[in-house]
Amino acid sequence: MSPSGTSDSPAASVRTRPGHSDPSGPYRCAAVIPAAGRGVRLGPGAPKALRALGGTPMLVHAVRALSRARAVSLVVVVGPPGEAAQVRTLLDDHLEHLDSTEIVVVPGGDTRQDSVRLGLAALPDDVDVVLVHDAARPLVPVDTVEAVAAAVRAGAPAVVPALPVTDTVKQVVPGGEPGRPEPVVATPERAALRAVQTPQGFDRRVLTEAHEKVPAAGEGATDDAGMVERLGVEVVLVPGHEEAFKVTRPLDMVLAEAVLARRRATDAF
Image (cartoon, rainbow, N blue to C red; front, side):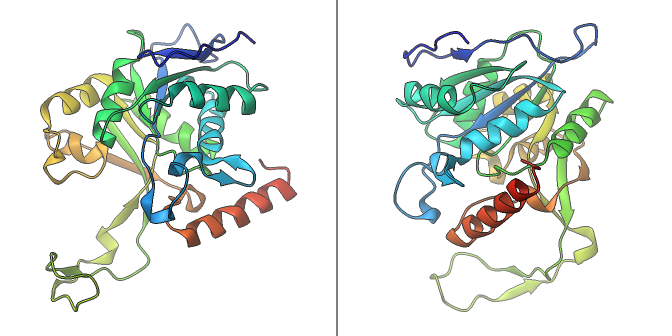
């Protein structure tokens, strides 16, 4: 394993290994993991992506999951601004036994959209398929990663894993004081709703165009697929997985610890 540097340069490599995608194939797939957020809903402390889950930072779990996918030959981690060297060291310490995947760390921006854009800029020219994954979804199964990548390779310009919505959802008038009653204006048909997850997969050209054309405010988009929708490009869904949930609140961390403990007990992780 080659030693990692300590510079916060735009694209500092943690380690380089030969990719394990088929070199004769027409596509190369890379993953971008924006991990620069502070995660205030989890309470004070380290950035959300660096919070420990089962004794290991969530970011490490997420990188490991993406790296284990045969479709992925490169993972770009977009860390907190000014902390790229620390993130490189952390990944080096925890992922020394990984092989066949190149891992690169770049400093992120002020917003998630900025960080994804910086991650895209760090990709080599031969990458055709890009997966964007939330570091706060540390337990995404490898099969979900593979399914998203395969759908993009099959010709879909934008692919999102998703699950049916089990709760009834109410549309309300937003903007009131927290805790105050909110008027309900509609009840969407639950059968037509899906809860989306990550990694979200894209034809690189489509995602790059979205980040070039959609303003920084995102025009209401809360994920990369939403930005692509603004271009009029079709987004398709593939089945997600219940363990690919987002760790946002303290109760999510309790559930994640339980899932990880079960995996470790059955040698599934």
